[in-house]
Image 1: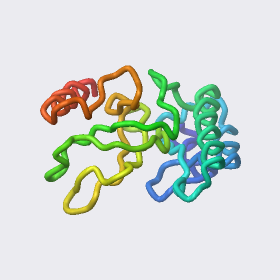
Image 2 (image 1 turned 90 degrees about the vertical axis):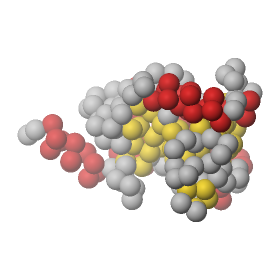
Image 3 (image 1 turned 45 degrees about the horizontal axis):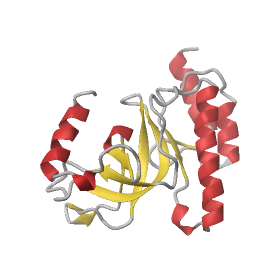
Image 4 (image 1 turned 180 degrees about the vertical axis):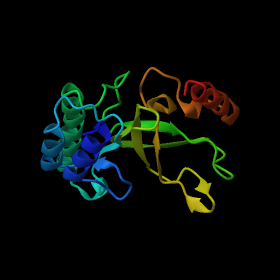
Length: 184
């Protein structure tokens, strides 16, 4: 049996969302993934998030976010995915996320919101952050930009040590984006 056949069998046993990513949002979904202990699943995309997090009461949301953070740690400790190169910001924390590109793209080049999930990007072999914006951060083809899935280097934690995007000009943000982009 080829490695690709093993991966297809593993994906069939796991919960997969509409985007084709393995979704880890419950203890049962985590248990199914952990049965593949020691198997390198880095060529599979993973999504650690609750899709309807806004409808959950605050106390339950905190417990959910703690579970998802622990799930990432367990999946990495089990050897299924690599650990993040740098610590990921806690779920639920307030951040500013860079938004560049788009047609035409927002003037401010960033949005403010909360980290709502983590994803493993099997294309770039890196971790991503899901950010839901408090207010639309501009428009893309006339539709409001209500969130983003982006690389940790394109996010600043409010109250953290890095300079916030709100303290930068749009030109400075674009220059930083080009610098970050060269790393990929």
